[in-house]
Length: 291
Image (cartoon, rainbow, N blue to C red; front, side, top):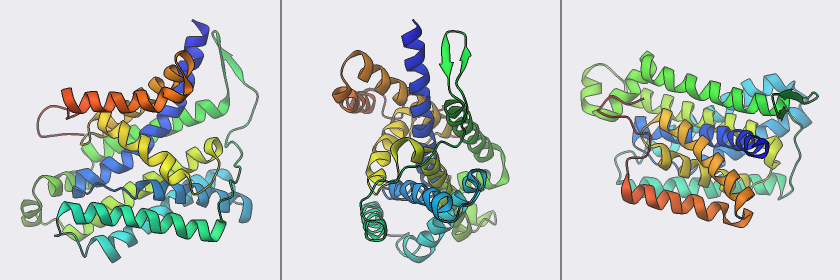
């Protein structure tokens, strides 16, 4: 039982990062109907931003958690303004292929600057582990699980209740109707890309101490982000959070009780099963008003 609880805690730690990664995908998709395959590259930029801020600029870690997502969000807004705004009216295939090549371009540019070395990042929270019942918990685990989920549920609340989220949902439901209500298409799309890629940057800061900082993060994070989004429901922020947590638990249990080499295969089989039986996702909300 103790081993199961320890594995569950580890799965929640991984799943919280997966949930945060999936959130950025959902934010952009809900507002713009764009499936952003460059999302992993923006997560990678967040990791490199954390490395540069800590090791080169010697910024305090708490400031990195504030500055890096903002900078990555600005880069996402610039990408929307310079590139994606020009092809907004193109077919979905063109937009998707463009995001794929943006991901490749950003990854290779980073590889040219930093090469393929893996840079280590220290944990944000240090300190001795403490006991919670039968569990031995580290402060870093508490920070990752608590911090990532706090931001995730906060983003879901803003999207559901705040004026900004209402505008994005209106644009996604009916762009022409939203314009007639006074909403700016360009403004909302730019805000959506900023929020989505800023969330990706924050996920990159969270994941850097665990995976290290390298160009491979772009691929290593985009796959679980999509899997978590599909499991939870690709149009639900709450579903993305729950899907990320579920994916982290499934991968951890599979690696511990079956085989570490099969954890990805089990996750993909689960996705195929969900797409076949319930393509809207396990946690997709009912009705038209979604969060």
